[in-house]
Length: 301
Length: 160
Image 1 (cartoon, one colour):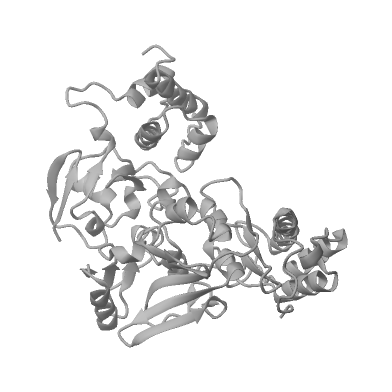
Image 2 (tube, rainbow over the protein chains, first blue to last red; image 1 turned 90 degrees about the vertical axis):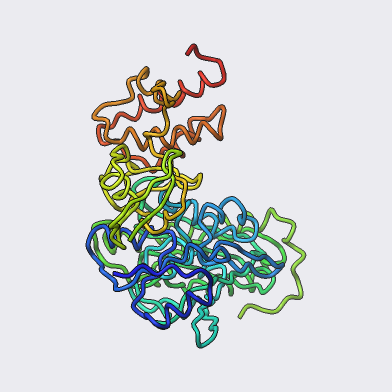
């Protein structure tokens, strides 16, 4: 095994181009487990630790460009206003020791269906900035996850950053596990309201081969909010709507039975989390100043 | 490969380090510092917790090469040079917070770090800080007592 330690980003891209089998190493919370437990012996380790820019972020009114190696600790402490859903998800990652090292870029690189960041990214709306010596691609998050631990990166590409839409409405994230720390999700659900476009987006974790959205649940909720004039009135949602939203979220799952939970339990739990996050986000929307002043915006897609 | 780092204030060099080796292995097997414990090797148990450039990390998840030039503090670095125990070490002894002892080094590191940033931690703060450290003797109540005792001594509300 060869240890590559590029001094800057161009050097890192050149190294990845020369050694496509090189495994990028940042926080080590996934890669080192595989090395320690003898599950993986890559020809090259590509240590990105000297590239400080990967641990920085830039914020505009519309977007956060989150460096690939920004640790979850910083997302929680510094970006909870712009990225409330991702900050909530970050709070559930591992332990303080893990959140100090682990990053959203690592979650994307590993592309485990159980990664905590994924549902929040899907719900908020995001693109992955994938870079190689050939150039830069912006991969929509909806197209990024291809299979269990498989993503859309080419062998010579590295994740430079994730561009995440800054929240313009309430966002929630909820996760089922056996305790409040050090837990891999049995299942997870994220919901983001986007009042400026009168849309909603969802994300489901650990209940399908990849992280997925629940398009039918989103369309149902969008239609209901639009037809009922809820975006303008901020009126409470009928209880049957939350139930239906939950059912449609569960129907978007394709779970398996495994040591953490059965497929049936996961579907049930996703329905519960969908209802719960809907109540929380809608109550937050109703009590915010946004309600009743968002008329005249584009209709629901 | 060779790795140069500072451990507990002293410059150290480890030779013949395998490229896929962890900082934990370097500390224990190459530098003779067995305080950080090797248990799960996957960041689940916290028994290998050390301070790396000021941050608490699981040493098993840090590649040796990533520690090049770094400043590392292990549990061996908590006590004074003359052997006087650090306040958290004294509190763990006095509260009976040690059973088999395997989790103790990691817990001491996180407790020490917590008290450095929180002079008067709530039980919630303590539980959060210790949430990445497992004690399989299940001695958590005494461990919480010890952290509360160390905090109370630090702000003068408990005798030393």
